[in-house]
Image (cartoon, rainbow, N blue to C red; front, side, top):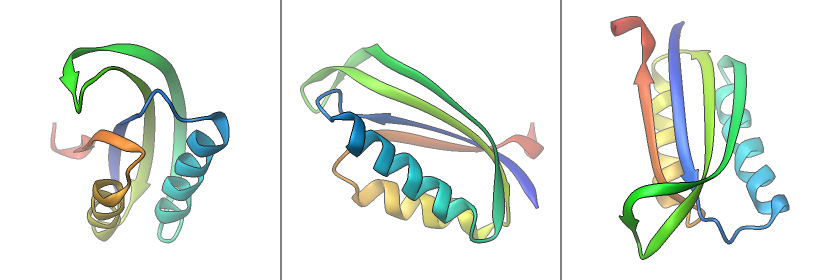
Length: 95
């Protein structure tokens, strides 16, 4: 298993239930063949530039260990989610 870091930005207009639902979905995908090591909720922050006419976003950082197919599945799910405005997955082992 490899070490990964996921950062995703949610729409600031989402309520707490929707934010929790996205995090639970991410955790469920990771835990199919991996483990979540740390979840760090950064909260609402100003974006460096406007994305989809939004100036703020709700940031979440997830560190996890998983097999190589999990990042692809996460990427696919986060791309089709209307709640997520940006995301990035980094392989920490390749630094």
